[in-house]
Amino acid sequence: MGISYAQTANLLFALAALMIAAHLGGQVFARFRQPRVIGEIFGGFLLGPSCLGMLFPGIEAALFPSTDGVTLPVLGAVYQLGLMLLMFCSGLEIRASFDRRERRTAGYAAAFGTVLPFVLGVAAILASRQSGSAFLDAGRFIGSAGSETAFLLVFAIAISVTSIPVISRILTDLDLLDTSLARVVLAAAVVEDILLYVLLAVAVGLVGAVASDGGHGLSALLGLAPGTGSSLLYHSLAPVLFIAASLAFGPRLLARLRRPPLQLPVRAGPTAFLMTFLLLVTAFCLFLGVTPIFGAFVAGLVVGTRLDELSPAREAIKQFSFAFFVPIYFALVGFRLDLLAEFDAGYFLLFFGFACAVKTASVWLGARAAGEPNDKATDIAVAMNARGGPGIVLASVALESGIIAAGFFNQLVLLSVLTSLLAGIYLERIARARYRPVTPAVCEP
Image 1 (cartoon, rainbow, N blue to C red):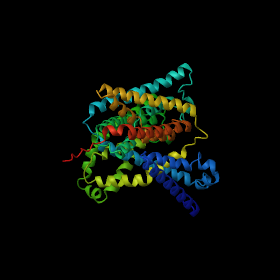
Image 2: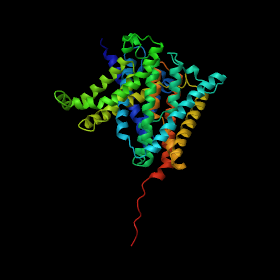
Image 3: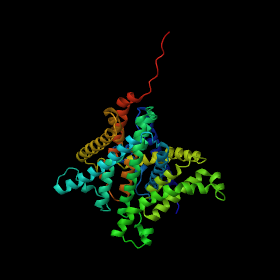
């Protein structure tokens, strides 16, 4: 089915507007040494219903029409591709960033910073429901899927998650990437993110957002009816077994593809080969009933093990992704924020305070248990409180899967934005002086 010239023109104008807003917002925030991703979200927010839609509703309706049947569906597809490529690139960076020199502190920080926030997040929701208290009672934010268990997982993940891309970018901008602080934070964040992405895949599987769609997938072939005990067990184990098998056999598969007769297409078009590999892995995840976003992340982990001729292809994919698809994805995240219609400020203050207090205290305890001094433990805790990209990915996937409602999507995105901003400000003004290399003084003769 074709589309008219007018629809094509409208789509191109919408994409151009999102690109301009995302890149201008990113550049402005980067100039003030703040995460570029926050500026990209802010740029999209300016084009959305809470800003442009409120001030000039006619312009917003003309730029993003909901009735032409083309613009919003295509933007939705670009949104999904941007999210998929972001997860793929995140998997690549995890392999590149991992460093074992500070593994004791990183291990304690990851263990305390994941387990304690997760358990306390679950406990807070359950205690609020049993006591009838309004504190953190998020029942009204459960999405269309109606799964309280999946919502509970997403809520606990939101309390626990740490952003590798955002904190890595902040540390790079502050010339702190080659410091003990950076090594500990990034190594701990690697462990946290892998565990939490597995849990997110389990949450999506529990609502049957992928495998039960139209009766497709391996679970349908096995005759597992959605909602049964066997189906819940399958969707809980599938992500775990998938990542274990991928990390065990994926690097060997890539190495085998470099041998005859398959080595010619790999060498002739390495970028196309990696993109095809990414698409096939995500499609296989759909067949398994695992969210394809998790498949993209695992594909990045596997490709990140190859440090050979695939490196230029990886860089090419990253450059194009972060020039086009990823900025538009973050701009669309901002565009979706409707703070006028679906935002509970009072609940957000409680949620924000609880999430920050639990996460920073847990990581601080872990760092102190590993023997770190108070100042460094505090720096690690504040840095790992930044939720950034993973927090926004969590919000996006949970909303698309029907786990959360739009109101909680707003809460999660704002939590990710503000914690990233606070981490950047803290590291810039307080922690930077502790780790900045000192230039030896030159003595006068």
